[in-house]
Length: 136
Image (tube, rainbow, N blue to C red; front, top):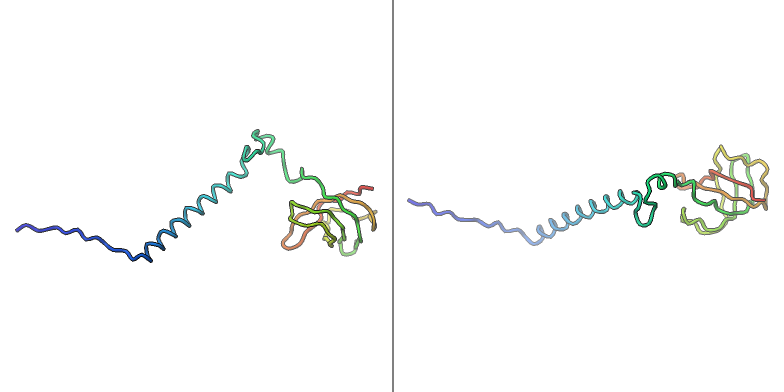
């Protein structure tokens, strides 16, 4: 007696198929974004310096300082109020704001009306002045 072999084709619901495809697309997209982000810091990426020594030498401290004017100084609380131009690297529009000042930055000799150049660092939801130069 010869057995007849039947091939059973499993049917998948359209909903399960769609969910599977969406999961596959999400997985591929996350791998693609991760590899793109990892390559963004590589030398030669979108016109960055192709020489690795030059790229390593370029750091965040090479960014130009922001120009501003002192509105008020609160040395007791280690704060300064500055009127400043737009700061694109921190996505800040120009305006007036009270900034905390790093303990390494001296506020001595600054008074309202002084022109200054400064650099900021983001600390959570606030900005801290990490470098301050009197421009007068």
